[in-house]
Image (tube, rainbow, N blue to C red; front, side, top):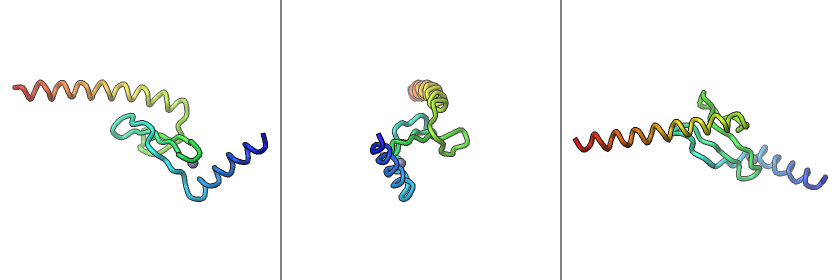
Amino acid sequence: MKNSTNQQNSLKIICDIIGHKYEVSKKVTSHVKEYTCKCCRKQLTTNSNGHLTELTPKFKEINSILEEIYTRRMLRLKEKTFSSSIY
Ligand SMILES: [Zn+2]
């Protein structure tokens, strides 16, 4: 029990010293993305101000709604482009 806690702490210390190794884990919209740290699995997301913030369950919910709206809008845009290119 004590050992696993120590291991997690040392991983966190590495991140604190050299910084998290974030990689994009999910693209929600063209400017909202979700990031996961390769090292400690900490998750971040872009908030409405365009800043990075911790990915809380609330933000996950917001992102899934955003993703749905974005996907629908992109589909509609594609249809529009397609039909206008015919005429
Ligand atoms: Zn990390």
